[in-house]
Length: 124
Image (cartoon, rainbow, N blue to C red; front, side):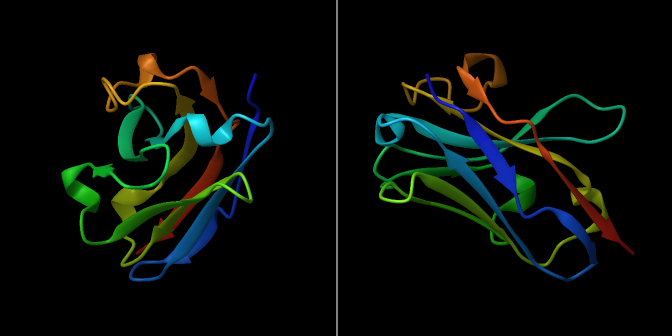
């Protein structure tokens, strides 16, 4: 069992930066691939980024490539999402999630564990 708690969301102006953190409980954190998803008001949850167990591989949706960076610290049981050059369209609730396999890494319904989400609001 893994419990995930996100933090770091907030209100930022367009062009600004935020760093989201997701703290995981449990000794098996390093066995999980971790992902970040977001859900804007009235829209479906969408994939943002993911990282493999040891951090050697990462994946991003096209709209955040070059602006967002996912990383993890398996000693601290934490995964991060550094978000730079934020745009109003990045406004959403951001969720971290974990799964054992890197197969179907983009698919939300393939993830086993989810955090409660943290709100990110980017003003224009």
